[in-house]
Image 1 (cartoon, rainbow, N blue to C red):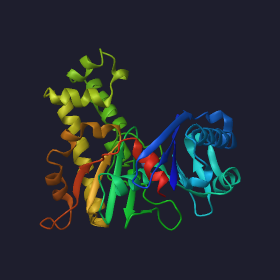
Image 2 (image 1 turned 30 degrees about the vertical axis):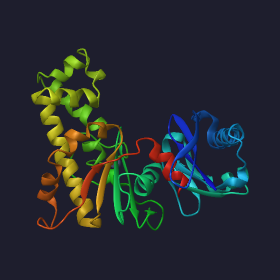
Image 3 (image 1 turned 180 degrees about the vertical axis):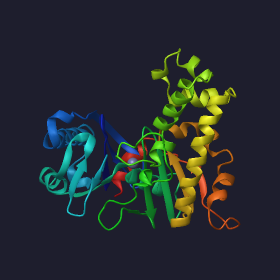
Image 4 (image 1 turned 90 degrees about the vertical axis):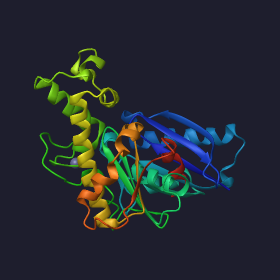
Length: 311
Ligand SMILES: [Zn+2]
């Protein structure tokens, strides 16, 4: 038997046929055309999956289940809400079952799904309790307990990017102030660099951005850090300090075996992981005991497809 994993993103949808070893055998992708609406996007997915099977001489009878990662949440009634897709309590489970009547359908938040992928076949393999933080434009995450995703009593849990960990000088997209996302995302790194430069600080970051503040990206800040740029060091030190507080909260709450970091920012994992354990220890309650290993995710963007397949 095979499994299909579908990773629905804000701009693109990726799908793959996965074997029971977590290997993606065949894959395909299409654009997410938000203006087609909920049903239009599900129709696109149906066409895409039928074509993927046909092209590879597979039959739906050979597929055990289809799992979906969505950039939002699915509640316990099977209704999906994804703000950036303009889906508001849509009938996810029913509409998918209508399109794929003879196969099991599962769905979860995309970062939660990626955590499952990492837990089954990647950086958190073998851990009874693992937590993935995806550090990208925002901060998402997933909690896996005994190889199962944990999303709480109402399907709303594991939004670990919106733990409030301090006061920040700008608000989170969610409307709150002080979310992890506003301290530990690529956006946070970019905004704080821009702030310091606007305040008159000289920085190599601005050279790398060809003098245009708006062109600054997180990679430039890490590159400047490697060149010992004082502003970049200040930005990354602040980022790591809040990341350490966040991980300490997770350790105090769940005491996982592994905390894994994924997402675009984790490409600089050598800088992020360097000395992070000592920083985390400053904030955990039981400072002398063993604490979670902090590692880098290994499946990259495939975690979404693989995790979805195994929901
Ligand atoms: Zn928030």
